[in-house]
Amino acid sequence: MAAAGLKQSEAALAAPDRSGTASSTRVWINAAIYFTFAVLAAVVQVPTLLAGERFDGISLLALPCALVLPALAFGLGWLTIGATTRRPTARTPVMGMAISLLALVPLIVFGAVLILD
Image (cartoon, rainbow, N blue to C red; front, side, top):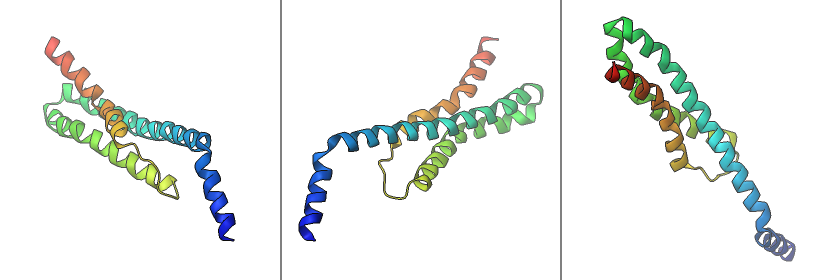
């Protein structure tokens, strides 16, 4: 029984193609999850920023929310990745942080529009 277990572990270590394919697949899944939350965070900001142009009180609320949403997108992505896997997986926090910063795009665009006008 011990010999069979040893042969299985040796076979698993000797087959790098399987682990490499699973790892690259997992990276793409992680990227898709982080990207989805970043896009949702960006979409949530647009109505608030548009309303801020008409009403002065809303613009005071839009800036702090826009700065917090990338962190919220990263946190939700991190939790979703953890919930979708049964065993410990290779999370990609650096890639997740970079992708989550895409949620700042509406704030940057609206800021550029205000500065250029």
